[in-house]
View 1 (cartoon, rainbow, N blue to C red):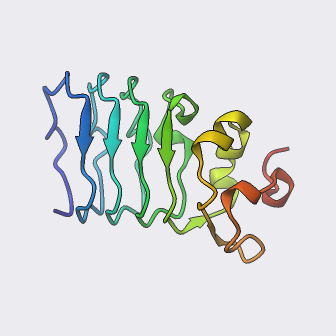
View 2 (view 1 turned 135 degrees about the vertical axis):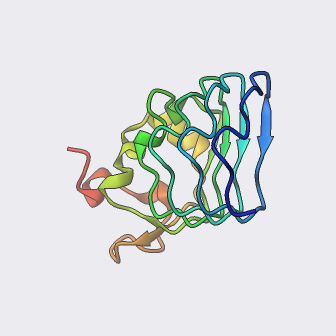
Length: 149
């Protein structure tokens, strides 16, 4: 399965866990998770996602665990969460993605430091730029990213 139709989960208001891991999903519609406020666990691991639409997770106010690891995400923009910030999550797994450590993901460093230490694994690595390539997420500094001034 490489895609899902908008509204495919319509009416599943009481769904608590959704496992879409280990598919071949390439794209997700922006409103795919609309009206799913009770969803607590969303698994999107081991797909082929390279981009996430703005606000895709914004209706998931109950989300506490998000698994995005082992995709092709070069960036994870804050706009995909809108009002539902990952600092509210118990688990936010993003390792195994070719992340470009640039201004697009600076918002992660601006998040609460305690959350970063607990929830973002040391095995999240930068794919670039060259000065940060193959460095773990936990070793980034705001100065190196030149974005948190």
